[in-house]
Length: 242
Image 1 (cartoon, rainbow, N blue to C red):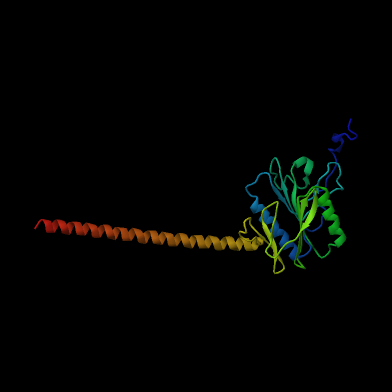
Image 2 (image 1 turned 90 degrees about the vertical axis):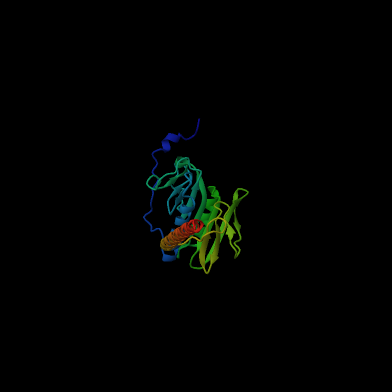
Protein backbone atom coordinates (compact mmCIF):
# COMPACT_ATOMS: atom_id res chain seq x y z
CA UNK A 1 0.00 0.00 0.00
CA UNK A 2 1.44 3.43 -0.91
CA UNK A 3 2.54 5.58 2.01
CA UNK A 4 0.67 8.58 0.59
CA UNK A 5 -2.80 8.45 -0.93
CA UNK A 6 -2.41 10.41 -4.16
CA UNK A 7 -5.98 11.66 -3.84
CA UNK A 8 -5.05 13.55 -0.70
CA UNK A 9 -2.86 15.81 -2.84
CA UNK A 10 -5.65 16.90 -5.18
CA UNK A 11 -6.58 19.89 -3.02
CA UNK A 12 -3.07 21.30 -2.69
CA UNK A 13 -2.93 24.91 -3.92
CA UNK A 14 -0.31 25.78 -6.51
CA UNK A 15 0.02 29.60 -6.82
CA UNK A 16 0.26 30.99 -10.34
CA UNK A 17 1.98 34.26 -9.47
CA UNK A 18 4.26 35.79 -6.89
CA UNK A 19 3.23 39.34 -7.91
CA UNK A 20 6.80 40.07 -8.94
CA UNK A 21 7.40 41.90 -12.26
CA UNK A 22 8.29 39.73 -15.24
CA UNK A 23 11.44 41.76 -15.84
CA UNK A 24 13.39 44.27 -13.80
CA UNK A 25 15.08 46.22 -16.59
CA UNK A 26 14.55 47.09 -20.24
CA UNK A 27 17.37 44.89 -21.52
CA UNK A 28 16.04 41.85 -19.69
CA UNK A 29 12.46 42.45 -20.81
CA UNK A 30 13.46 42.93 -24.44
CA UNK A 31 15.49 39.71 -24.48
CA UNK A 32 12.65 37.70 -22.90
CA UNK A 33 10.01 39.03 -25.30
CA UNK A 34 12.26 38.29 -28.27
CA UNK A 35 12.85 34.71 -27.12
CA UNK A 36 9.20 33.99 -26.36
CA UNK A 37 8.04 35.37 -29.72
CA UNK A 38 10.75 33.44 -31.56
CA UNK A 39 9.96 30.10 -29.94
CA UNK A 40 6.21 30.59 -30.36
CA UNK A 41 6.76 31.20 -34.07
CA UNK A 42 9.19 28.28 -34.33
CA UNK A 43 6.73 25.84 -32.77
CA UNK A 44 3.51 27.35 -34.13
CA UNK A 45 2.68 24.13 -35.98
CA UNK A 46 3.35 21.82 -33.03
CA UNK A 47 0.40 20.86 -30.83
CA UNK A 48 2.69 19.01 -28.40
CA UNK A 49 4.73 22.11 -27.51
CA UNK A 50 4.01 25.00 -25.16
CA UNK A 51 6.16 28.11 -24.73
CA UNK A 52 5.93 29.77 -21.33
CA UNK A 53 7.23 33.08 -20.01
CA UNK A 54 7.90 33.52 -16.29
CA UNK A 55 5.25 30.93 -15.45
CA UNK A 56 5.47 28.74 -12.39
CA UNK A 57 6.56 25.18 -13.08
CA UNK A 58 5.65 22.57 -10.47
CA UNK A 59 7.46 19.31 -11.24
CA UNK A 60 6.21 17.35 -8.19
CA UNK A 61 2.59 16.80 -7.24
CA UNK A 62 1.76 17.80 -3.70
CA UNK A 63 4.92 19.91 -3.31
CA UNK A 64 4.02 23.55 -4.08
CA UNK A 65 7.31 24.73 -2.59
CA UNK A 66 9.22 22.86 -5.29
CA UNK A 67 8.73 25.46 -7.99
CA UNK A 68 10.63 27.47 -10.57
CA UNK A 69 9.66 30.24 -12.98
CA UNK A 70 12.05 30.27 -15.94
CA UNK A 71 12.06 33.52 -17.89
CA UNK A 72 11.35 31.36 -20.93
CA UNK A 73 10.63 27.64 -21.09
CA UNK A 74 9.78 25.23 -23.87
CA UNK A 75 7.62 22.29 -22.80
CA UNK A 76 7.47 19.33 -25.20
CA UNK A 77 5.57 16.05 -25.33
CA UNK A 78 2.17 17.44 -24.35
CA UNK A 79 -0.81 15.22 -25.21
CA UNK A 80 -2.90 18.33 -25.90
CA UNK A 81 -1.62 21.86 -26.40
CA UNK A 82 -3.06 24.04 -23.62
CA UNK A 83 -3.98 27.69 -23.99
CA UNK A 84 -2.53 30.45 -21.83
CA UNK A 85 -5.83 30.54 -19.96
CA UNK A 86 -5.62 26.83 -19.21
CA UNK A 87 -2.00 26.81 -18.09
CA UNK A 88 -1.60 29.62 -15.61
CA UNK A 89 1.06 27.38 -14.07
CA UNK A 90 2.68 24.28 -15.55
CA UNK A 91 1.84 21.34 -13.30
CA UNK A 92 3.90 18.64 -14.93
CA UNK A 93 2.00 15.58 -13.64
CA UNK A 94 -1.29 17.13 -14.80
CA UNK A 95 -0.38 18.62 -18.17
CA UNK A 96 2.16 15.97 -19.20
CA UNK A 97 5.35 16.51 -21.16
CA UNK A 98 8.58 17.89 -19.74
CA UNK A 99 10.67 21.05 -19.89
CA UNK A 100 13.07 20.61 -22.79
CA UNK A 101 14.57 24.10 -22.55
CA UNK A 102 14.74 26.62 -19.71
CA UNK A 103 16.21 30.09 -20.17
CA UNK A 104 17.16 32.68 -17.60
CA UNK A 105 17.94 36.27 -18.56
CA UNK A 106 19.84 37.94 -15.75
CA UNK A 107 18.63 41.09 -14.03
CA UNK A 108 20.71 43.40 -11.83
CA UNK A 109 19.34 41.74 -8.67
CA UNK A 110 20.35 38.17 -9.56
CA UNK A 111 23.19 36.75 -7.48
CA UNK A 112 25.72 34.06 -8.30
CA UNK A 113 24.35 31.80 -5.53
CA UNK A 114 20.80 32.22 -6.85
CA UNK A 115 21.82 31.21 -10.36
CA UNK A 116 23.64 28.14 -9.02
CA UNK A 117 20.46 27.09 -7.21
CA UNK A 118 18.42 27.57 -10.37
CA UNK A 119 20.79 25.45 -12.42
CA UNK A 120 20.71 22.73 -9.78
CA UNK A 121 16.90 22.81 -9.83
CA UNK A 122 16.77 22.44 -13.61
CA UNK A 123 19.37 19.70 -13.49
CA UNK A 124 17.52 17.79 -10.77
CA UNK A 125 14.16 17.98 -12.54
CA UNK A 126 15.23 16.80 -15.96
CA UNK A 127 15.60 19.90 -18.14
CA UNK A 128 17.34 18.91 -21.38
CA UNK A 129 18.95 22.26 -22.07
CA UNK A 130 19.51 25.45 -20.09
CA UNK A 131 20.60 28.91 -21.26
CA UNK A 132 21.76 31.79 -19.08
CA UNK A 133 22.20 35.18 -20.73
CA UNK A 134 23.50 38.32 -19.05
CA UNK A 135 22.36 41.27 -21.22
CA UNK A 136 24.43 43.77 -19.26
CA UNK A 137 27.70 41.87 -19.79
CA UNK A 138 26.77 40.27 -23.12
CA UNK A 139 27.66 36.85 -21.70
CA UNK A 140 25.99 33.56 -22.59
CA UNK A 141 26.16 30.12 -20.98
CA UNK A 142 24.62 26.99 -22.47
CA UNK A 143 24.16 23.77 -20.52
CA UNK A 144 23.12 20.51 -22.19
CA UNK A 145 22.10 17.24 -20.55
CA UNK A 146 24.78 14.58 -20.95
CA UNK A 147 24.92 11.32 -19.01
CA UNK A 148 21.92 12.39 -16.91
CA UNK A 149 23.43 15.73 -15.87
CA UNK A 150 23.66 19.23 -17.30
CA UNK A 151 27.09 19.95 -18.74
CA UNK A 152 28.29 23.34 -19.96
CA UNK A 153 28.94 23.74 -23.68
CA UNK A 154 31.34 26.31 -25.06
CA UNK A 155 29.70 28.84 -27.38
CA UNK A 156 32.12 29.75 -30.20
CA UNK A 157 31.97 33.09 -32.01
CA UNK A 158 30.35 31.33 -34.96
CA UNK A 159 27.56 30.17 -32.68
CA UNK A 160 26.20 26.95 -31.21
CA UNK A 161 23.33 24.88 -32.58
CA UNK A 162 20.80 24.08 -29.84
CA UNK A 163 20.36 20.30 -29.54
CA UNK A 164 16.74 20.65 -28.43
CA UNK A 165 15.44 23.22 -30.91
CA UNK A 166 17.97 23.37 -33.74
CA UNK A 167 18.28 27.16 -33.54
CA UNK A 168 21.67 28.83 -33.86
CA UNK A 169 22.60 31.04 -30.92
CA UNK A 170 25.53 33.34 -30.33
CA UNK A 171 26.44 36.73 -28.92
CA UNK A 172 26.78 39.57 -31.43
CA UNK A 173 27.82 43.03 -30.23
CA UNK A 174 26.74 42.11 -26.71
CA UNK A 175 23.29 40.93 -27.79
CA UNK A 176 21.88 37.41 -27.82
CA UNK A 177 21.40 36.52 -31.48
CA UNK A 178 19.15 33.56 -32.25
CA UNK A 179 18.60 32.33 -35.79
CA UNK A 180 16.06 29.91 -37.22
CA UNK A 181 17.30 26.32 -37.72
CA UNK A 182 19.78 26.05 -40.55
CA UNK A 183 21.18 29.53 -39.84
CA UNK A 184 18.06 31.22 -41.18
CA UNK A 185 16.53 34.55 -40.25
CA UNK A 186 17.55 36.19 -37.02
CA UNK A 187 14.92 36.61 -34.34
CA UNK A 188 13.98 40.22 -33.71
CA UNK A 189 12.08 41.98 -30.95
CA UNK A 190 8.28 42.09 -31.37
CA UNK A 191 8.38 45.69 -32.65
CA UNK A 192 11.19 44.92 -35.08
CA UNK A 193 9.35 41.79 -36.23
CA UNK A 194 6.29 43.93 -37.01
CA UNK A 195 8.47 46.38 -38.94
CA UNK A 196 10.09 43.53 -40.86
CA UNK A 197 6.70 41.99 -41.65
CA UNK A 198 5.42 45.35 -42.93
CA UNK A 199 8.54 45.77 -45.06
CA UNK A 200 8.16 42.27 -46.50
CA UNK A 201 4.47 42.93 -47.20
CA UNK A 202 5.33 46.17 -49.02
CA UNK A 203 8.01 44.41 -51.03
CA UNK A 204 5.60 41.61 -51.93
CA UNK A 205 3.03 44.21 -52.99
CA UNK A 206 5.59 45.99 -55.18
CA UNK A 207 6.63 42.68 -56.73
CA UNK A 208 2.99 41.82 -57.38
CA UNK A 209 2.44 45.20 -59.02
CA UNK A 210 5.56 44.75 -61.13
CA UNK A 211 4.46 41.25 -62.12
CA UNK A 212 1.04 42.61 -63.04
CA UNK A 213 2.67 45.35 -65.12
CA UNK A 214 4.92 42.81 -66.84
CA UNK A 215 1.92 40.59 -67.56
CA UNK A 216 -0.01 43.54 -69.03
CA UNK A 217 2.98 44.47 -71.18
CA UNK A 218 3.30 40.86 -72.36
CA UNK A 219 -0.41 40.79 -73.22
CA UNK A 220 -0.06 44.02 -75.19
CA UNK A 221 2.96 42.65 -77.07
CA UNK A 222 1.06 39.47 -77.84
CA UNK A 223 -1.88 41.50 -79.18
CA UNK A 224 0.42 43.58 -81.36
CA UNK A 225 2.00 40.39 -82.70
CA UNK A 226 -1.41 38.92 -83.47
CA UNK A 227 -2.45 42.13 -85.23
CA UNK A 228 0.77 42.14 -87.25
CA UNK A 229 0.31 38.49 -88.23
CA UNK A 230 -3.27 39.24 -89.30
CA UNK A 231 -2.15 42.19 -91.41
CA UNK A 232 0.59 40.11 -93.04
CA UNK A 233 -1.90 37.35 -93.78
CA UNK A 234 -4.30 39.86 -95.33
CA UNK A 235 -1.50 41.35 -97.41
CA UNK A 236 -0.50 37.90 -98.67
CA UNK A 237 -4.08 37.18 -99.66
CA UNK A 238 -4.29 40.48 -101.50
CA UNK A 239 -1.04 39.82 -103.37
CA UNK A 240 -2.05 36.27 -104.29
CA UNK A 241 -5.33 37.53 -105.72
CA UNK A 242 -3.71 39.92 -108.18
